[in-house]
Amino acid sequence: MSASPTGIRTADGALELRREFTQSPSRIWRYLADSQCLALWYGPWHGDPERGAVDVVLLLEDGSPTERVEILRCDPRMHLLQVQLGTGPTAWSLELAVQSCGEGSSLVFRMPGLDPQLAGSVGPGWDYYLDRLAAVVNGADADSVDFEADYYPALSEHYEELFGH
Image 1: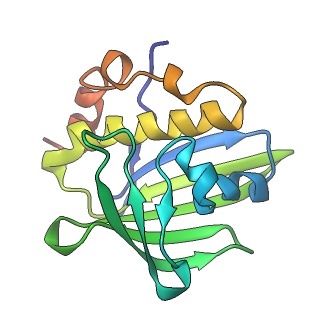
Image 2: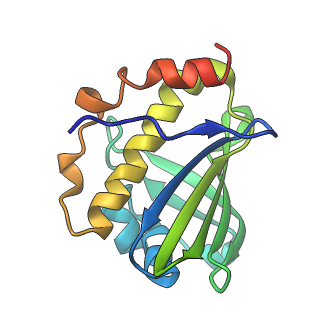
Image 3: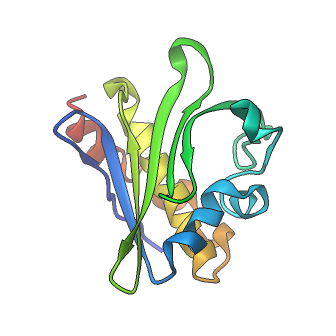
């Protein structure tokens, strides 16, 4: 498989990526909000989301570290999720929205405030994770998506140019 960069830089400077699915928004939402489904492509979470934060195990990162995720907004009816990944000045804001699109749905992933110095690695990383999500949703093996072979550094230049680095 050879990956292509899909991210754009929006007018407000956010990194935005989209994925289209034949499944309903509620089915795609499960892969974002349900720990067991999230584990299939990203990593499981544990804790009590009602308290406003969970801990996510980053299964594919070296050592499978746990990252604190603050839930800023979660609206299952509207399929909207805003989170802060990590803590302190290096935390990332992420916005995910699943919308109806024809017979299926569209996932819009936004990362406002991306440090241009990080765009060459962060952009390929999110393309990779969202392609893993697409693989799982479509019944394929997420492990068939290969970060080092197809995403990084192969897609880095696209994101470095987008963010002027």
